[in-house]
Length: 77
Image (tube, rainbow, N blue to C red; front, side, top):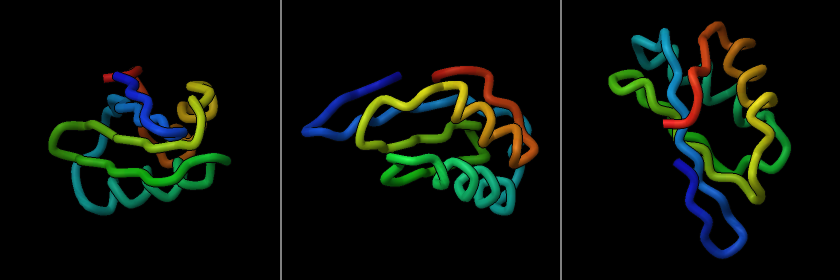
């Protein structure tokens, strides 16, 4: 799911493997390092990660960040 508002894009990704607050923090930290990311909200209970960015993100960059955190991006929610 992607929504665009006044120069910001919100995209929701589905990530597998997150089970706790530490997992959420690891994914949030890695995705926050991508250029253009404004905010990240990871929710272990649903496996969803909501990313707000200044422009649409390259999904490969998001996938690499999630992999670096030790989880798997399965695609957009």
